[in-house]
Amino acid sequence: MTTILVTGGAGYVGSHTVIELLGAGYDVVVLDNFSNSSPEALRRVRELAGRDFAVYEADILDAVALDRLFAEQPVDAVIHFAALKAVGESVADPLAYYRNNVSGTISLLDAMRRHGVRRIVFSSSAAVYGNNGKGPLKEDEPLEPASPYGRTKAMMEQILRDAAASDPNWSVALLRYFNPAGAHPSGRIGEDPAGPPGNLMPNIVQTAVGKRKELVIYGNDYPTPDGTGVRDYIHVMDLARGHVKALEKVIRERIVETYNLGTGRGVSVLELVRAFEEATGVRIPYRFEPRRPGDVAISLADPSKAERELSWRAERDVGDMCLDAWRWQRQNPDGYAPDRGLREQETVRRKTRANHAE
Image (cartoon, rainbow, N blue to C red; front, side, top):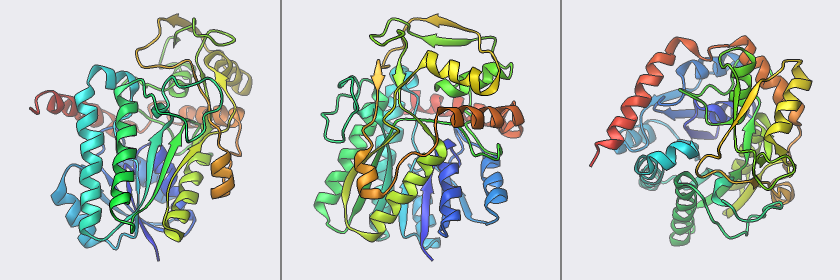
């Protein structure tokens, strides 16, 4: 049976992808340092999938831990999620992002090469496009990342391309996805950021459940129809299925390809708020604040290449995302509560280590 290593597998997109992998018949090994994720998520994944899998608590920068994992597990391919991912935090602490995301990816690729594993699906981001254009973005658009986070993703993509150019045994899929939202339809797993969330949907549902007094909308003066930022929101289960489709291709063929995963439909912040209110019947109070550094006005995918080459397309709409996200938050108002304090302490320690590492 084919065994897949999922780095960052306890995270939001990672945990949903692990469920899809298990459902598709793969064996899974998860590597996660739990700095912004929870072991409880993996316990619930086991419960939902009815299958067990190996978990290693370690950092991708830890070469010794990576060697031990590859020596102990028959890994055939890797899906690489492990990274810091908040645009605003990357502007405030860029060195932590370059160290963790770029150096961590090099550490992982070195370990893969030492152990003869050369098939990888990489979790990239639409942030690599930055302010480039207003229409649907194709994969061959010039890259103009507007934040350190986006620049780390663009660098990681280039590192993977260069590795593949040096050795034709590599098979690489680079997945640029847009704005994940929603949750598993069971409501058992979902998005649970440690500390204040950087994404819109968790802010909306935390406001709906009473954890926040009101939603803060950053920027109402963008060149968009209602002045708020426009994004391509994709249901996390559609996104997880896209990773499985990409994995099938890198196992079946030797490729180095980039794919957008999105819907191709733009939704503004205010439109998403109204869609949530309509789907759930819960009113969301909000106020405006100035734009955040690194944010862009419009980010919209052209997903036609993924549909053509991976036989993948998004199937769920914004209403589904709102309902599933609300079910998750309503059933879990404090998220994966038991270890939240430990996770927040680890986040502080991580930032402290980054600030004093040199």
